[in-house]
Image (cartoon, rainbow, N blue to C red; front, side):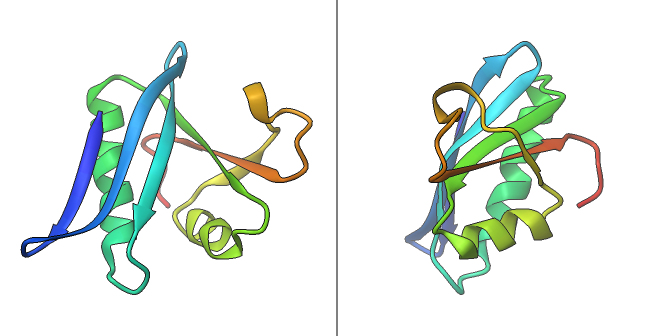
Length: 104
């Protein structure tokens, strides 16, 4: 699933979901124009789509140097989890998870 956020005719963000393992989905390639307010709305739309796809949890990875993204995901109710898959053992990666239906 792919979601595009627009403000008028301009794209201000995008993101995608993919199946990861069982009822776990992975949030991929989420980008939002800083200061546009699109990030939270985009993430909410992706989470709604994940529920419709019957995912019970979403996982994601971001870079450890991306402190803005780390703070954003923490504010949205995501918690740090052990690095998974290709991110396992990679100190440059920070992984997060969120159970769907939890309030962020």
